[in-house]
Image (cartoon, rainbow, N blue to C red; front, top):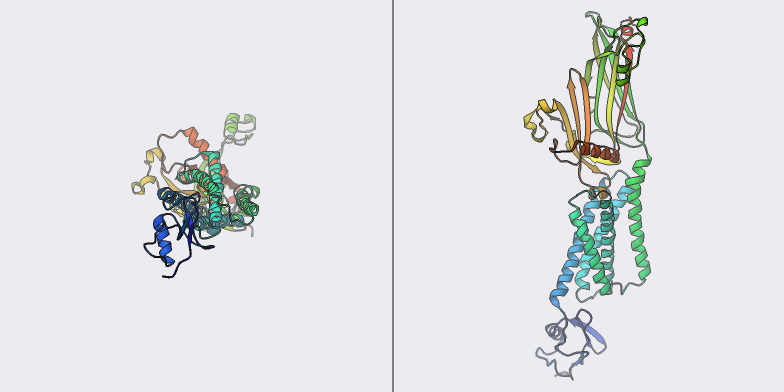
Length: 485
């Protein structure tokens, strides 16, 4: 039989793996005596080779019984590393994808792609665990896992820091809080295993990780704090009466009304709620000797105090909606609506007044689910959760939907917010109400009114919701003049 070269079994490393050499060449490694025999058979050694024969095998630091590998511990550690890296990969993908493909600004999209790229690194690191916690045939698997653990620690620390600012419950907390503790444990395990060995220039490696984290933080701060606050939303509303036209047959006047809205700023904006109203005003003539009438009523109602007239009575002539709730106007975009108001010639009005009211939200701070554009009738029982007995809520048209931050990092660190826009129309006039709440119920019970109002104010400021209006008024007597020829 041909004599085989002598086999050398090297001392076990910190994990219990022993390298196998033939001459000066490393031919494999083994965790156990069974693994050693498998390697020897692959090299052509006899199946029943005597491993105690010192002339054939040289044992360094121990003998055939020195196999300190604890298989269950090694595999459990590797499984925990893989689970944490895969969990971090999924979390980063869920955060990054909506921003990368749906954000309004370039900075927000860059942040989204950084998170997606980081998630891809986490996935590669999970595959690298199989080699590094195995026989380490590849050189840089330890460095890849170390990079994955550092990314997890950096992103989970960022998410926890942002969550601590408000401390609002979100289901995502159940993901990044355990992952933060996992990343601390993973780094400790990797440092013990000297995972940095094999990295050509460790300092440049650490600098690259720090630079990537800094880029993500700067992009986040710019896209979620600076940019949405530096550019104002500018809306111009116009209400204008046209030239009145007397009806040739009936004793009425046709009064054209133009309602116009234009986004004159640089930020797109949602139209959340709106209405227009046309009123006929009439006041009692008091005579000069009467002096200023009812001054306290004028001060309380913010009316003008007139010498010859008291506080006017106002009657609704026409009212309705202007634009579709949930739609938006891009910068420079405008919307125009023409109406015709019919008035009797013998009406006892002193003046005709028209109002246009609008609630607007910045589109760069959040987006509204499509569900918001669907109207619901509060008086209809078939509307389910949107039904409210008329004796409690009156009769209103309701638009309700989920609000989401444009920066998805905020969505996973803040509780969900819902926006409700209501519109009432009755003989007294047209009314709107817009509220923001974390409650998923349209009519939450046992709610502290003061607390709900405080939350509404906070969320209104956070999402950039504001109100704007315009009005015009003409003397009724001017409408009775024949048109100029």
